[in-house]
Length: 197
Image (cartoon, rainbow, N blue to C red; front, side, top):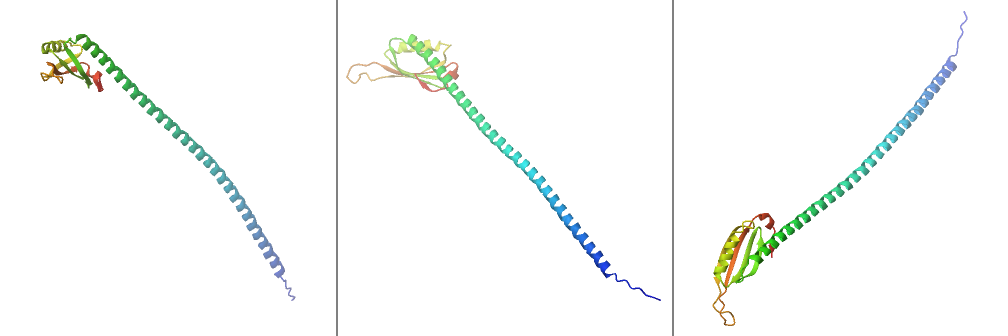
């Protein structure tokens, strides 16, 4: 019987080499594919990041525009409030001027000859009149006429009448009487501002 021996080592070596090459080739292809996929993912992330960054920049610009517009609107509101305050002040001054003109005209027409005025003060709807007279009876009659003026006054009160010394500084007889009258005006809103006529 004849025995034939086959040396399988070279075949085995070739097969192992082919397997090794196949594995290395698969590893290389896998690495290349992994790099390509990583590059694609990175590119996608970069694209999304740039889109997001651009969106945030637009949002920041919109926020700045809104902040600027809000500041402008606030400035305009402040300006409107300031103008309203100025208009109100002018209306108050005008109303007080009308009241003062009417009072001066009325007092000028109704003031009797023996009565003189030193000071008139209009404050919060109340008129204070200080003056002098040589005739208390004329003063009393004038105050009575003022009380009858329903269109101008609610009440008219004679606060005091004081007689000055019988002689003035030069030694001449004086005979004058100092007085003060307080009158509450009708339509007191016209006298809300303090003023002196």
